[in-house]
Length: 390
Image (cartoon, rainbow, N blue to C red; front, side):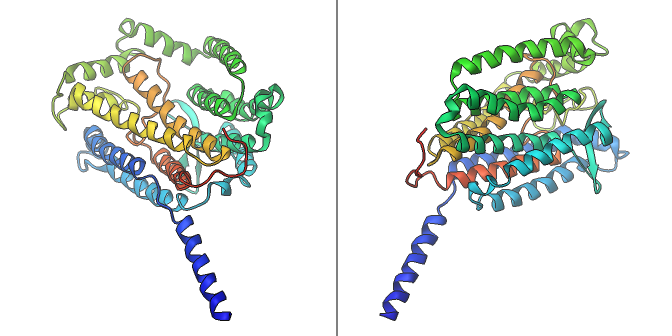
């Protein structure tokens, strides 16, 4: 009998291990690694001239080295987070939310100004934007509220006021920072998550209308934002100042033609196009790889985003589905906004291109978030949990 109990216990442990050891979604992982590799290659090309200039023409890989190190840190975080059950974040949602608000408010007191914007803080020699953490925090909290509200998420009291109050807690400090791009980004992510959670579309449309009014008023009151609108509509009226960057971006895109000038042969990256390795890296991609190369990269982003939504649709619980949809939407909105700005379809927002633009903190955080999404994908083939089906 003792031997049988031992054998049964061993079999149960084996079954438990096989259930918890399900593989992550391989297509999503391959698409993610492909984008990361291409992004690092294009970052090297786009930052080559700037790196030489900043180092007195002694080093051409300054920005690539920093980005590569952060990529390794992000990949390590991705592996670790992909093995942590998504429910782990439930108990930390409010703690992270409170910490994010404190960090956002601390920017107003102790923040450092970078390129004219006071959105950075420095802790132990590490400089980062608290808004990057706030984006993730908002997604975690909305996923938790979805689980807590249940069917009540369809009601105005919780589906609108509940989510709205949580959103305002993040947006108000951002408004004080004059961080309009983060406000727009988080607002769009919040709308998608509220829709997936069950909020009635009529309330979301009303909220979208209120958001438009807010943006118009905000832009009217904030002079710098108004200058961006003017530069967007008529960049040719001030080609040496407010319209300079977007004109140089359009020159880069146009000169690439169908097949591009060739990898490493961009002319605009030689200090003509500002932030050519950051927000405007896609313009250099268009110049070097041409229309077909740009379309291929856009296709990779589209495939990654669609596969991410596939994971969300096949998640076996409401919480995991909303959590996954928020993480995917964050990447999708950042990509769309960046491509729109670079091509002058949208006013300048300062939103970076995920996995491509220079920025170690953002890259590491994005990879960590994708690790959580990969962790959610482990549960796609399991029976649904005992909770309300989406």
